[in-house]
Amino acid sequence: MINAILADDEPIIIRGLKKLLPWEELGIRIIGEAWTGRGLIELVQKEGPSLVITDISMPDGTGIDVLKAISRLGCKTKVIFISAYQEFSYAKEALALGAVDYLVKPIEKELLLSAVKRALSLLKEESEDLQFKNKLALYEHKDRKTQLEELFDCLIDGDIRKKEAEEKLRMLDSGCDFDFFTVMLLEPELHKTDARWGEHEKRLLLFAVSNMAEELMSCDFAGVLVRRGDRICAVINHKEEAPIKALALEIVMHAASFLKITLSAGIGQEQPGAEGIRSTYQTATEALNRIFFTDGGKVVCWSEEDWESCVSARELGEARNKVLQTFLKRDRELMHAACQALLEKIEGHSGGSREKTILAAYGTITEWAGGLAEIGIVLDETELQLHLNAMQSFTKYEQIKAYIREIAAGIFQRLEPAGKDTQQLKTVKDYIENHYMDNITLEGVASKIFMNPYYFSSFFKKHTRMNFKQYLTEVRMKQAVKLLLQTDMMVYQIAEEVGYNNARQFSDMFKKHYGKLPQEFRNMAT
Picture (cartoon, rainbow, N blue to C red):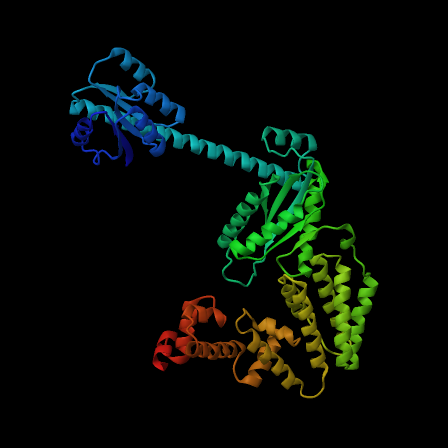
């Protein structure tokens, strides 16, 4: 539906025009009337109609004045003139200025209909042409943006020469006119065990983070954002000593407020020229990896003195051996103190690197295994691999610290001569009670008491008279019953709460266990 205005200094003519054509059927809505030239110009300025049908000779401004005003305002309004006289000079000037037609009163219906249809056709053509131009502009923008992203990818990887990079930056009109570059890496905290974050959802989230960061960055800086795995890499072009940390804090705050996620940022060392982008990216990576030792939602700036190891391999080895000696002495109190000292040594040895931390922690377990083998306690390769896999999935050093302490406690318990089976079984049951909602496995639980998975399966069935999977299901079902009877949670929520990612699987298991579907069970009990 397009909007139209009718104008004539004789109201009877306007009434006649309204009745002459089926305007609504033509897709036209009459939104206003004018009786003077000035009144018509003011109405056009206010409403911006697509079509005007007006007498060419009106008081206080002619139709030519109206056309000139429309042109001046930049409106795309189409004008059809009507007149009581066939004034050739008026008609010629009106058509030269872009009028659609010039009709002489009394207006014939067919001639008016033809003029209106021609105006509609012109409006449609212009609209399609504008849409086409907008699409072209969008494609050009996308193409330029893609080329810029590819160029900065090459600069980050060091796969392009300085001269070629500078030429491409100039040709692509990158807007990078400042002397310095700094890379800021952004990483959302997405737990791998959280079923909400599939690959598709992760892509959407990173897209949203990119858009938000780009908008905030463009206020004061030039540059581009590219995706690097599960991270967003912002290559920022700026003046010397620009407030990059303030920008990072603003992005992290917006992520928490509007996207409801925890976002961490690592800021690299400022570098002059595009050739320094690779170096600032590497230092930004080191800075972001430091988040491993802190809470999420932080901004860490690279600093040279922070990244060197302050604990030697010899010192680390001595700390590991002290813990091993406490095992052999059966001194639990000394063991806790030695573990604490060891964990501090591991952090100091890593130099801020997550990878070095994991290797140091795994090296600790393998060294303990070597010492324990001498007194007949064997940790085979399968168990050691399970420990490595577990630690590689951790996103925070606190998780590794807790894991090392658990392993140390398990070893100590294994060395206790009395009630060994009872203690081991208690450890396993306590672990299941506290982690039934997680994706726990027989192999993972077996490693908690340093047992081979095959031997553990037999050990567990001997003491509980059911296999591990049956026992875990029993614990989950009992908890599900509590939630059904004591809360208003939906069935799918209860399924997630007790460790099932699939609500249908949970319902089937519940029915197999209790003979009724969860909702039926709840209804029967109320």
